[in-house]
Length: 127
Image 1 (cartoon, helix red, strand yellow):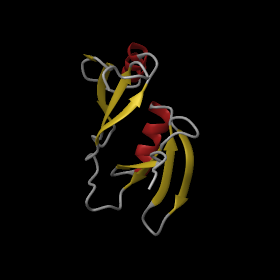
Image 2 (cartoon, helix red, strand yellow):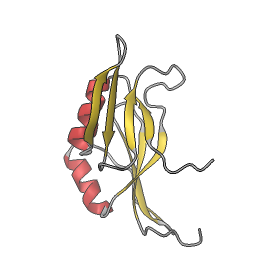
Image 3 (cartoon, one colour):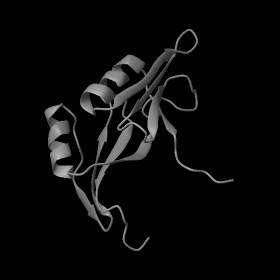
Image 4 (cartoon, one colour):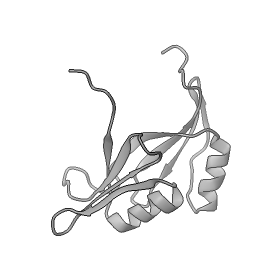
């Protein structure tokens, strides 16, 4: 088996429309698809950049309660600028943490899913 890439990650949310608004209007994600899926759900798929891994906003998995996702990493070119943009949009970020692989901070979406913003070299030293 040869896995080529991560395609879609599920982000557990309580309100798909509110989450869609956050990911599009606050984080700047692009809408790929928003289709009905059964009676009470939609397939909402978004991506930071076309052709890259995408997310889908899910509310139908009992084993994935809203807010239970942690540790997903978003790469940014300028961490300080990204933090300022998020704060201007009402998002609280954690302290900047330096590491051998760059600098990072965390923030949460409205449901409490925790994301990492990372600025750093493409090549991670020692790995």
